[in-house]
Each structure stands twice: as C-alpha cells, then as structure tokens.
Length: 228
Image (tube, rainbow, N blue to C red):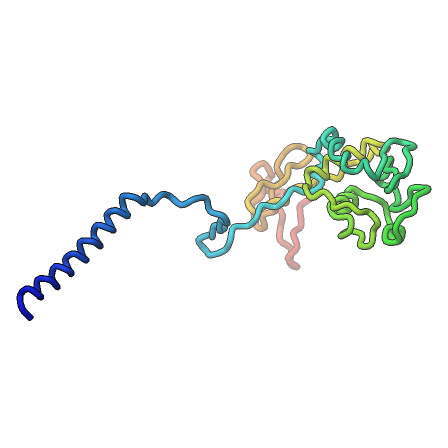
C-alpha cells in the first residue's frame, strides 16, 4: 500500500468521524429535551411496608342525608318528571305517583300496574332501599319496567331523597349516623355527673378519703368482705 492510498483511507475515516460529530451537535441544537407531560395513569403510592394505602371510606347514607339539600334535590327530580308526579293526588304516568312513597309498602300505590318483581317485594320503601333503587333500578329489581339508568352520585341521591321526603313524609325520621367506635387510648365516656369513668383496677389501694377500718378484708374463700 503506497502512501497515497493510505492517506485516502485515513482521510475518509476522519471525514466520517467529523460528519458524525457535526450531526450530533446539530441535533442537540435543534432538539431541546423538555419535562415529561402529565401522567396518563398515575400509579398509587406504595407504603414503606409494601401495602397500598387504604382508600378513604365513603360517607354513609345517614351522613349524606344529614348534609343534603332538598332544593338541590328539586333540580335532580327533573330527571324523574317524565315518568312520575310527586304532588298529592297527582296522576300516575309511566311510573306511579310518588307522594308519600317513603315508609309506604313497596308497589302499593293504587291504580298502577307494577312489574311482577316489584309486586313480589315485601316491606316498605326505606331511605336505604330507595337509595339503592334510584342508584341502579335494574340492578336492584331485575325485571323492572323502569327504563332509567339511575343516579350514580351518592350526594345527588341524598338531595333527591330529601326532596321526595318533603312530599307527604316531612316528619319521617332520618337515619341516625353511627357513632364512631372508640379506639385504644381514648378516654372513657363521661358519666351522668360529668366525671370520666375510670376502669376497674384490680388490687388498687383504697381511696385516700376512705377510712382504713372500712377497707375490704380477704376472706378464707378469696372473696372480699366489707366491714359493717
């Protein structure tokens, strides 16, 4: 290989390296990497022990009703007006008149032909039953003629139930929210005289203001006997 041929090969190699370097620099100038966009599906955070965080418990129907708004329920009832009336003495339409429906027997409104699945149901329309029925009519009563998709939002249903209650059932008592369970370490509930109830303490010394001669004495069979 003569020097001329070697120079040509070396020049070609250097030219290739130079072209690659120029392309890399130009690409960095033209393209500016930016921050990532919003995550399409966020992954739930994992606790240190590997367990997924517990989901917040949804409020109970009693809590929702305690905070419901009947005027908002009047707006929600517009979805029902095509099939129902609610005023006292109102006519049946595609569905029965709903005046006084709360705590009334299921499928008992006069002059309306109910579907067999509702006619065979026993009991009365409680808040809980109406809530479940309004949420998913066909899921609650499979075979019902009520062609309504239901109201999925629990707060909207509570508003609607409070509105329905105002027509003939204004005196119907709302469900009582359950009292939160006492957790370990919480103070015991107060007694009627306002003092906190103290747990029994086996083997504790008698109170300071109790006379010593009134303290309990141990009998032979192990039972405490108080002095007279």
